[in-house]
Length: 84
Image (cartoon, rainbow, N blue to C red; front, side, top):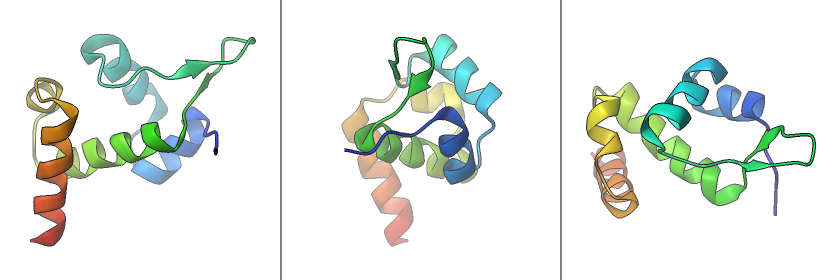
């Protein structure tokens, strides 16, 4: 299993680390794991979920709307957008 830092997630998703932290606190869209040093890290499933959220967000879906959706709906909507 891979571990990703918040900087890795920022680079892969195009969403600034500061914004990811705010979304984490405000919307609880994802809950990163923490090392003993308290630094966040994300696994493969977290990365996939965040990339789906990023896709929806970058395609005009408001984060407040995304936050209200269950993970299965986020997955479905992202797939629909991807398939066109």
